[in-house]
Image: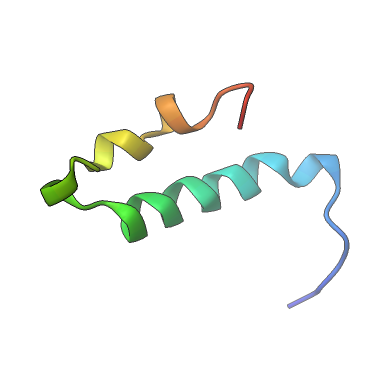
Length: 48
């Protein structure tokens, strides 16, 4: 394992990790947060 400052080339791996983390952690059907709320199509946009 290597710890270093992130660079622009890391952005895809970083956003992939965030999307999967949010999808697995914050999904709660009882309050309307379905897995689709954190899908790649929704999560990965210019604002993210």
